[in-house]
Image 1 (cartoon, helix red, strand yellow):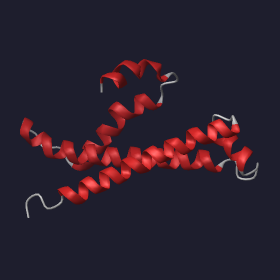
Image 2 (cartoon, helix red, strand yellow; image 1 turned 60 degrees about the vertical axis):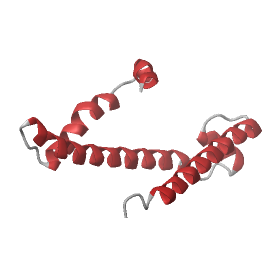
Image 3 (cartoon, one colour; image 1 turned 90 degrees about the vertical axis):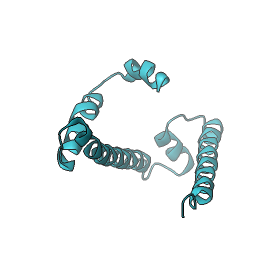
Length: 122
């Protein structure tokens, strides 16, 4: 059974890549057509002023979901790694630590341009 999932995983990867590229292309095309460069203005131009809040709510919901997913992932990863350093930390403490230490200070940044150098490095 070793290696049986590589082909389906690669197929999912390629499909996700194609879907992401198509989505970005659609966003760029909508910007060209409407001459609006934020999602709320595009919504108003294409659909109307009713529900202009929907794009912002969707973006915030997806962002919170991604943050929660990554926090749980790092919590699980840290829980598995800490015994190698001679101490065991429970999962909830790892998740709390991952939430408070790197994530919370970044949430309070008013200007994200300071992160440009580390983002380019990563």
